[in-house]
Amino acid sequence: MDHDRLLTVMRRLALEAGDRIMAIYSGPDFQVKAKSDTSPVTEADEAADALISAGLRAAFPDLPLITEEQAASHGQTASTFLIVDPLDGTKEFVQRRGDFTVNIAYVEDGVPTRGVVYAPAKSRLFYTLADGRSVEEVGPHDRDRPGKQTELRVSRPDNAALMVVASKSHRDQATDDYIAKYAVRDMTSAGSSLKFCLVATGEADLYPRLGRTMEWDTAAGDAVLRGAGGKVVRYDTHDPLTYGKPGWDNPFFIAFAPGVDLKQ
Image (cartoon, rainbow, N blue to C red; front, side, top):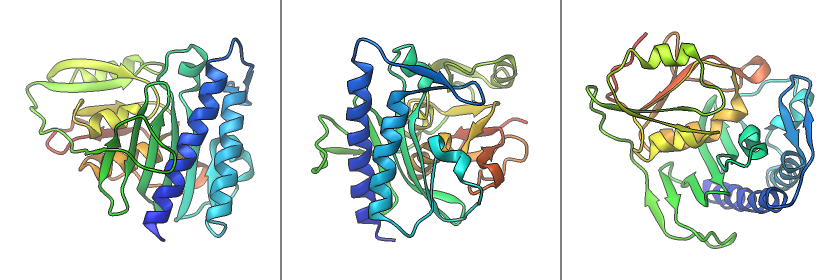
């Protein structure tokens, strides 16, 4: 894989999709439908999916492509592939809260090694460079010319005073009970894959997810966090989270900065 070309294509498509999403988000109204699992989908999800899918298939025709909006057509699993959530955080989008992202990732041998996470409403853009290091690019964001980049490194956590980030839309008692096992200095909430990015920037030490997610929800954020020195492990075994699983379902997981004393 030409990782320089991969970054160029993924970054540009994320920005283009973000523009398409924001045009709909900023409009007076948009249609919201329910998928078969009752989760919401909007015209922004579908427009971003079509744009990104066309761009990735043109650039990398030999790579399997998995997207949330076309998941029903993906019966096979793979170990190396592209995976996309064109609009992660649809609930935040519908409620106009701004915490939604465009996620594009490249998975090699079950590991997300490259990824782009773009939060267009917040103008925050995170990605892995060709060498695997993660950065946040300062806006405004030109589609064809990257701007100033800040390299990301996870925090050095203090287990007596941890900063925890949790979901806005999927917070539950099980998550609260798990967080209560730690000495927490403060907590914040965020939507979509931004939670991974907050750990990657050092703004949080720990992000536990005791709820259902799919691989397209996590792959790009996982790649960004790994490139910043962080880890994502299964909740039950503390083994690394892997990708290309049958059905694309994730187990419960914990994303964290090394040094956090993980609890069972």
